[in-house]
Image (cartoon, rainbow, N blue to C red):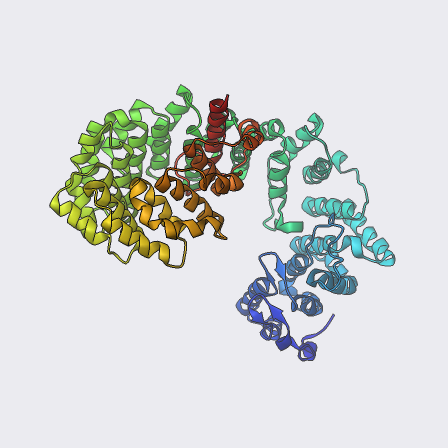
Length: 627
């Protein structure tokens, strides 16, 4: 270990951390010894952010280790945080044969330093504070496979003692995990302590084939229902907590995961752990939504506060999108919450709308919230005659920001064809939005789709096409073309946007309505077919097909991009529009169609539905079309 007096012996100015020169590290380490607790806490926070930053370590990280170890022993009020900093710095995957043995790597240097100071940190395993003992166990685990033989024996002896005698079950459970790092087996599954049995079960599950043995699932279901009552749930390797490890292991086996979630919910859903696990099962596996919704329904009465209940209700609403006929029991429960406490009524009503329960429409009309109106417009299109006047009234009252955007999007949900006349009656409100800058982008888009070409409307759109707001400029230019048939303003706007630096793909997608009228823009579109950024290549290929009507240049670009990613999904949609799906894509389409696992995670920016459902549906459609 090294004391603060030796800090000046290190050329910190020549070392780097996450934010450049490490010359501030000595000051932070000295602050650990001050009587000012807030300053010491801030120093630890800063060290977590600069010598370790989002999983990365730096030149200055290893030289700091002996000083941090000294502070552990001589700044006792900060032992927990400092020990966890050391464990985090040395973190690596012990199963990675290349790590941390990379010659000259920062991680290897950190582990070497930690091995040197570890004997002086071992007394922390006997600290009177449970949190210190648990943090010290993680330090030992970080370098377990690198300790010399003579030190390994004494460390294992201490771990054995902790495993057998420590008064805190969570510490004993941690000792089981660390002993496994040393290759030492324990009889953890036979322990009378639930925490120890659970730790043993997780170790067994890590090496088990799927599906998990029933007896293993039983241990996890029985002993994992109640989290450790302490507030020191420190992570292990990879910043993974036991909770995260449990979720990762259980989502590998859908039947086991759902069975465990059901048991945890039945036991009271403490900490919403069972319902959270159920949600993760739906996010990981396809076609499990009915089972998950049953579990979430069972979990609703167990939520300890409005915040937790609202989160579960939002989850119910999300997964209801994938169930064609929600059961009456679920809809009745949502209705009770929707007419109940104000704190949870909104997410409950949103879920009830998604279930298409007729009672939902009446409740929305009584309390016309913008988000609820948008959802109602999507799920009750036949109610356009009742909903549109309410939406118009809310817009006319001066709705701004996200509220205004949601209201205009609610109108847009009705579509320009089936309900065109009803939507056109909202033109005065949309024009006012455009004039006043309230939800102007979506208002301009809807005017282009459903508006009547009046002098006032076209002049406002022409003026908006000159806006310094590029999104408004592009949208208004296209809307102006839709209403007038004159491409001049649109061509000038898109020539400016596509000639500028930045994310040009944001604007290429707006060219579809122009079709061949956008031909003068081809010299700007064609170079983007070879852009470095995949979204730009995708958007350029899509636009090239729209403008030329020929798929020849677009198809090779799109085929290369197709994959289980957001841009890959969009490329597949664009490829489907060309009418050409090459034979070599069929194995990929079959994988998209029949995988039991979700291939795309959900995105809060993808709108209603789930991107993975879109991927599967589109792949199946294309496969069927090819037969």
